[in-house]
Amino acid sequence: MRIGVLAVQGAFIEHEHMMEKLGADVVEIRQKDDLADIDGIILPGGESTVQSKLLKELDMFDLLREKILAGLPVLGTCAGLILLADAIEGEPSGHLRTLPVTVKRNAYGRQLGSFVTLAPLKSIGEFPMTFIRAPYISEIAAQCDAAGTASVPGGQVPTVEILARVDDRIVAVQYDRQLGLAFHPELTGDTRIHEYFLSLCR
Image (tube, one colour):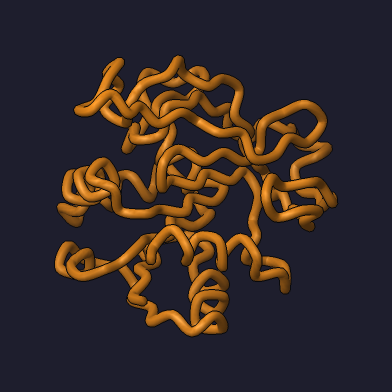
């Protein structure tokens, strides 16, 4: 299993350690050629606007988007969720726009900028969730495919599945083989989310 971790900016080392702990081969994604021959990719926390800008400057943006739309499993955490989202509240457009949700960035404000809570995660159970100036998902699009159309060949249309809420706010979703999390599972010793992501990559 060969997992790419976007390593142009942000907190990617912890994801690498988690993947290595689970026995996966890890490749740091720093240039376009690194996107070849990977079974999945992790988009880490950090600064989504900077990451998007660097993806474009390094000529990786379009290829990465194409691969995700074609079914490459992806785990986006915090800034990674923002990168994937179709829309960002208060901004003219999203970035990769492969995940049909709207996110609100820095949604918890200065007072709750960083906190840890234990909350149920679908199919996994109680999970320690670390939020750091985190977004949340404010809206889920109507049923559509990743390109934003109402149907796909064969009539099988994936839907966005809500995996977790905290204080009635959506903080984790799955759309086909895309996982979007507002929190940082890599900052805990709990490997269950990364194990689940690996299962999507097989």
